[in-house]
Image 1 (cartoon, rainbow, N blue to C red):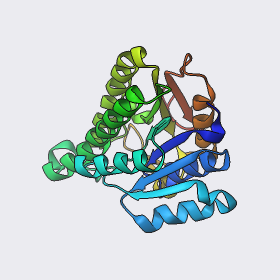
Image 2 (image 1 turned 180 degrees about the horizontal axis):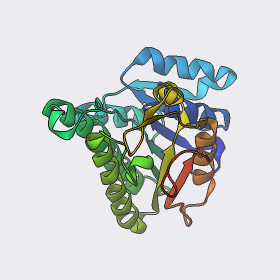
Image 3 (image 1 turned 30 degrees about the vertical axis):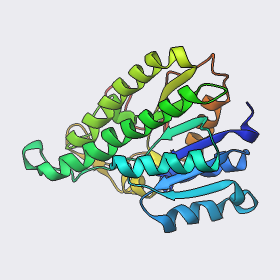
Image 4 (image 1 turned 60 degrees about the vertical axis):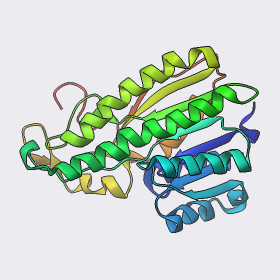
Length: 252
């Protein structure tokens, strides 16, 4: 299986990391299914691929809704008959407030998208990869630096990202019998509209405010391409890719 005939699914493909990864896959010959809630932003991503745009398929999807995910995978089966790569990327955050001030419905929204949505997509991808011929495929979960350490007032996002690590390990173990490799990419300070505020200053562990370095999001896209360039007998189990000078290693 070469990149030129692989079928990939990217969730959260309408902006940020999902957009950058989708474009890199399209430009490297993948047939890419772009999933997200907003059809217009998904279509914008495809159009940015220029001459490679014909390789993209837009499927508006709410990953927090099992029925919507089922419809997404029905579309993949109908159009391509198989799936070789799932990049489980869709995610949201919640307002930065102390834990006791976080509304329960906001907690549930984050859990439903970041954790349940990743499971729904992984579940469907696992079933397709197990049954297709040739059997197997790769699942890459977006864990985030928050899968390792929290930022202040990020209890919902951080909890779900820690849970993604457990999801990754279970999929990796359970996929062995079916040539399904599962790895996780933990991303720190990739420059996207969501992280632009970091240049102005964000809370640190001691609750002081400080600006943080960012890295070009294309580095994330290159990392995903590398992880999927391996044959299924090899797997990048965990990769941390981050702005070199961001506060993470050591005490900041």
